[in-house]
Each structure stands twice: as C-alpha cells, then as structure tokens.
Amino acid sequence: MKVYHLLFALILLLFPVILKGQTPDDAKKWYLEGNYTQAKPVFEAEYQANPADPSLNQWLGVIAMAEEDYRKAQTHLEFASQKNITQAFIYLGELYTKMYRFEDAEREFSKYERANRRNKDALANLAEKREEAERLSRLVNRTEDVQIIDSLVVPKSGFLSAYKLSRSAGSLQPVSDFFRNQPQANHILFLNERQDKIYYPQSDSVFGSKLYSMEKLLDTFGNEQRLSESINQNGNQAYPFVMPDGLTIYFSSTGHGSLGGYDLFVTRYNLATNSHLTPNQLNMPFNSPFNDYMMAIDEEKGIGWFASDRFQHPDSVCVYTFIPVSGVTLLESEDATYLANRARISSIQDTWQPDADYSALLQRSHTAMAPQTSAQRDFTFIINDEKTYYTLSDFNHAAARSLFSQALNLEKRLEQLESDLSERRNQLTGGANTSLTAAILNLEKETENIFQEIESLKFRARNEEIRNSY
Image (cartoon, rainbow, N blue to C red):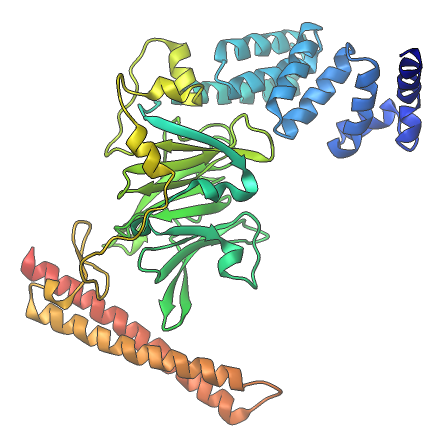
C-alpha cells in the first residue's frame, strides 16, 4: 500500500513533465486567451495535487461551464466563491440564473459588484448578467401548465429514436439520410404524411443554417424554396416540424431573441400574403437558457415531444413527452420556487393532474403505430385556414373546379417535361454538345412557364371557390 502511495505521489510530481513541459503559468495564459482545450489538462493535473486551491477551482469551473458540464461547474465555482475568488462570483451568478435560482444569483452578483466598484468594464458586464436574470425571472412567471408524462435521456446522436410518430404526423430523419451526397451533421429533415414535401435546414457558412422546402416532382424532389424571411432571419434555423394542416410549422432557432442556444418557435403560413407570420417563441417549460429543439406533435396519438439538453451530460439530451392542448394556460402561483421548478422541469410528476392515469398515453408514445386507412386523397389543396380539398368533388363551384382541373392536367405535362429534362441532362456528358445544350435550355424555359401557369391556375381556382362558396 505504501508503494502505491509513493508511486501516485511521484506521478503527480511528474505531471508537468508528462504534459510536455506545460506549466500552470502556461495553462493560465491559455485560459486567459480562451484556449480551454490546452489549459484544461494542466489545471486538472494540478487539481489532483491540490484540490483545495481556490483559483484552480475557479478556472476549472469556468471551463466546465464552457463545456456545458454544469454540475461540475457548480461544484468548482461554489468552492471558489466561498474562498472569495472575485471572478467566481459572476460566473456562479450566471450559473444560478440558468438554474432559476435568482436570489442566489443576485447574492453572487452583489459580491462581484462590491469587489469591482471602480471597474467600469466589470460593472458593464455585470449589468448585462443582471438584465438576463431579470428577463428569465419574468419568463418564469409565464410558465405554461403542461402535463409532461415521460422523459427519456438518450445520446444526442440518436435522439430521434424517442420520437414514435404515427404515419399521419409525417416522419423525421437526418438530412444526410435523405440527401446522401450532402451530409450535414445533426440536421433533421421533416417529410409530410403524403411523402411529397420535405422541410430541412441548409447551412450557410456566413449566415448560418436556414430552412427550405422541396416538393416531389415525378420520381425526384425539386422546386427548392427558401422559407419566408420572417422565419429565416438572424441565427441558425433548424429542426422543422409541420402540422398536418400544412400551415403550422414548429422550428428551432438561435436567433429571434433566443434565451440561449436553440429555442422553440411556432408560426403559420398566411395564404393571403404567401408568407409566414412572425414566429412566436414558446413559453417555459418548452424553452430554457439551454438548447431546446425538435418539437413534434402527433394529433392521432394525442402526444407531443420536444428535446432539451438542460443540465444534461454534454453528449446527452432529454426528450420530454407531453400532452398537447389547444390554447395556452399559464401557471398561477405565488410560490416563486414552485414556478421555477415547473419552468426548469425539476420533476415531471409535479406536472401531473391528481389521480390521472397516463398509462394508455405512455404505451402509445412508445409504440410505432401502423398506418390507418384514410379517405380518398387525390391531392392536397389548401383553400383557407379552415378548409383543405383532397378530390375534385370537394369543389362547390364549377368554375373553380375547372381551373383546378386544368392545373392538374398541366402538372402531368410538367412531370413529363421534368423526366425529359433529366434524361437530356444525363446525356450531356463528356464535353460540349451545342444542340443538346439548346434543347435543355428550351426545356428549362418551358418547364418554368408551365410551373408559373400551374401556380396561376391554382391561385385563380382558390379565389373563385372562396368568392362563390364562403
């Protein structure tokens, strides 16, 4: 046993040597430069030898926060704060804010303020942290009364395994599974029930990822359209899910006033303006200062899911199962601690109704449902927010039916042109071919003209039906 202790002590003494001559001074320099990857192993080696060093605890706490390992960060920062390390005050206050422990956060902020009374930069930084705490405190008071019936911690890389959608809700899959020649890490694609329209993010190295849609044309998807700028503003937009009405879309964004990382938003398509309405940020507990994403609602099952990495291991995410309801009901309580616990989802049992039996819902949530036989659907044509047509017999007005029938006939012509165009493009290999190039250009022009004519006929058919039937 003594030999073991001697060897362990020797290893600790040799750690700086093992780390290629890197010293605590080197690590501190890297830390101040924000190079936490290089600084961390040196600090950890020193911490093994001296775990009661307040500065080491503060540095490791900050690094743990940067790595989103919040449990470790809390342990280190609380120790450093107790030892009156000034920088630990503001970082611990920020961490308490994320935990909705606002009184504890303000206590740390006040200690930091007293220690930096004459430091204008420090006080300006403190003002920002306090403003964020006040904002979160206000949002906690708008926490929704949501029944969360299950939670499952899964690896981030395979979190979609927790989403057991029925066919009527559509499907989710990694973008790289659909576009095999365009791998995009961690991006998710939504395919609607009819499997003729997809929604997906596409990365831009300058402006971040934006959301696009594409429709099925014969045997391939095409006619890529970027979604409205009301959605695709600043930050990254990702994780789309479209309700069966074809109008309501949930998505996640790091912009739009996000609380931190990805937040969940919802918007609807406005048929009158051919654009999406300004997105609404979902309330707590759906959103938090962490990454919250991939909202999906299965109306057939009466179940919804969303994912969050709040206080999870950096490689894990928690998928929550909840009961979706129409409208928003806010929690009413004078107990600030209760509201904070409901906002952060400290316990899913706190959200349950008295004597409620969720066993049937839980069973459905864990089961991939077989598709049900549905009524005949020859197409999907949205008339307005309340009415969607699926067959020509759904039309009430003859003129509108005739216009839409013309559009359907042109769509068949368009499919043939797309097929011809694809074949000609495949032939255009091995060098220039003037006649073939000219033929392709003519087909492309004709395809575009027919597509515009189809859109015009559908627009006129919709207006004619609304004018004469509603």
